[in-house]
Image (tube, rainbow, N blue to C red; front, top):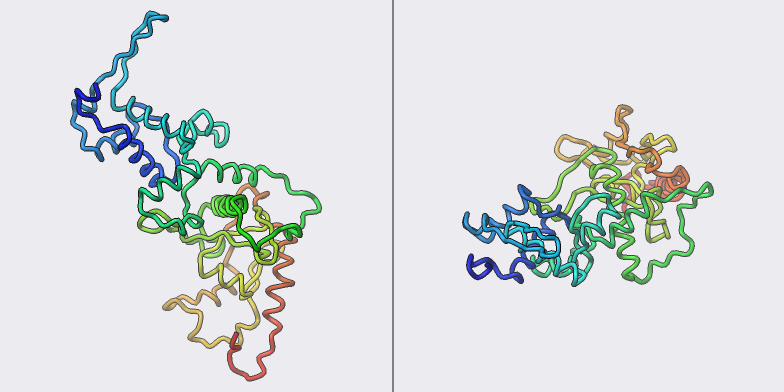
Length: 317
């Protein structure tokens, strides 16, 4: 029937399926009738109405029954099945146990293949918002973990000198868990936007205790910021109190009036506005731990605010 209806070769469908999974953030639902993805891929291959409506008849002699299914749906399923056998995607029966959603999801191997097919540099992998089965395992572990009573935001056993596969997965899992906890928007300004190609979000997952200083890759040592507020937090222009109020550095007095503005919006001085409220995650257990915030105040914020400006001009740092 594939030859009769001049259907696309299965290899072509497999490659198209990897590209679509990549474009859809790493996961798609099963190929049921009426599913948008089924029609989109049919459009991509330019299938005619006859090709889309062709019926494959399967006879089950042991059960004495005949099953009819659309040939195009069956071709999609077989392509996905081959990819699953090659460990490039997880099957819906596997994914549902992890995410509670019946989806085909890219594995790390499948993500690498999809990036090659989409002409995306491997260097971009760490910043992509595309899910993989292995990263979802990390996310599940992070969001389901119970915070110990003696939580320490510094991981004294952490090694940051060498990036391993495990640490890379952990880093991507941290980024995904934190940004999703904040609904993919900045905790300070609420900015929520993605790139035109859907391959990156503006929001970033910031370590409160920095990664370079052995900060833990867990949700209690994380907070979501836009690029500008991430930088301002990291260098100590502001910090957060234990009840999540924003505290602005007194060094603002050394700041020229023309600095820190985006046209008429003063993104630094706006932090002093008492009406500015944090966007915090729900549930509350995903919010930053007070010990991590205290570490930031003591080791980043306080040190930067105590620098003496003995020249009377803006400090050059």
